[in-house]
Amino acid sequence: IALALDGLTVGEAVRVRVRGVGSIDGVVARSRGGLAGITFAAADSAVRDRLIVRLFTAGRNTAMPRVSMWRATRALLASIWVADMHAVAPLPPQPTGPETRLPAMTRVIGPTPDPVRRSGSAGG
Image (cartoon, rainbow, N blue to C red; front, side, top):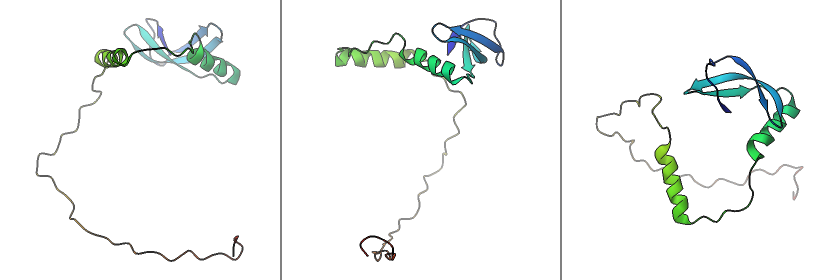
């Protein structure tokens, strides 16, 4: 979960109160641009279950929206355009020599006999 908090450092223990769930202990997993990503270590399964329900179902409308294909495509392209995509590590160098291929071979796999039936199996 990401929270708008400033001044937290990665690895710092925090306690977050979520409405409808209660207080949950966690650790700051990442912090960037005034946002802190919290990893929760909810050992209490009831608290963990309430948190999952709250995060994934709270305030969701289950009515099927009517959206045109063009509008959906435009929204998808817009989300790709504004996505924060950057290379984390440099790409490995590509080979510059000629392409090497394995030699072409043909392998014929003959039919196999029926497996031996066991004395205790059905039908035998």
